[in-house]
Length: 481
Image (cartoon, rainbow, N blue to C red):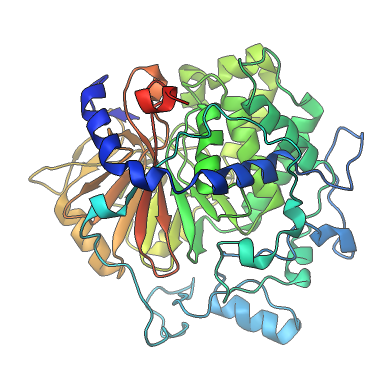
């Protein structure tokens, strides 16, 4: 985590808020409904057993939460053909974006781009795309008497691509869906997020946490190291254990499954509730495996969490042994993502060892983060305004990369934008190199020391980028409510 802003600039922030107030007032009703949807969800299959039950593929209940939700995970052309030959029900695919052959980036064997497809160009006027997160719903209040069954949300209410298809058979084949206690776990975790103070003990038992970790690992390993996703999707940067702010982010952007999400890493350390923060994301991943995605950050490693707080939190609020279970999950997380083949998403940055996208696809998991090399760079590298291509990073790990490296990378892989996290930035997002790279940081009022906004980058089906901003919790407009 780099600190690129000065502390406590309230005067500047108040001016920004006044210019965006109109945008912020148009959203509260939707956010409250989304909050109610997630907070009140409960599975009819709840059990008192302190474990997750993974049903068999022929269990009709195994798809009860995903039948009406469209996947954004793109599979390879070869896998699509295999499905067409072997099953009448296809996995989720986006036919309108190119899907490269994993065996050869330059292969002619790929899907064609349809005429009229709108790929994202450079964002010309970021101020026009900026939306201020509403503060009307904070502190959060549970809506009384309002319930919504999030397992049966009408497709018209979901912000997912209508061209994607998710079928009963494709989800059943994963053998991951319909886990009986997951809705209860989500409900308890959300309740903890709305508590007035941090509870001493975690709301889940060790056996329940172990079950969540085990199933999440299976899902992560069933999906590639390089995720290829279709739009629309909301991209979230560092959250660092700021759990109440994570809840605010979901209230702003929509609780799953009303929005698709891609998180860029750094879920633990520094904040007070890293356990709840990471566990809620794992639960959503289990419940919506093809619509909710989380990448690995540099803090998702044994060495870093031993130093920056997560190990101590596990020891204090759960068990020292449970820290190892989380490290095992960290070692299975995917590394990077491609949105519609045009936006490269990663926690840190680029690497001199990255010559082909297959280099990322071929990263074997589970794996620790090495001291140097491709994986280390993807999680640790930073962009910098330097006269050379690469130079040693001031963090003491990996490299800084210059503008020429970014331009050559985008040109080589026919991309429009690099989206990364890893650095606290004052406005919650910051463009670099003529808007060819953007840093997204989603923990407002970071560590209680910085007066920064948190941001979500929303990518529409047309690949237009906009930013939703979350005010620092101690900001005057946040305190008003």
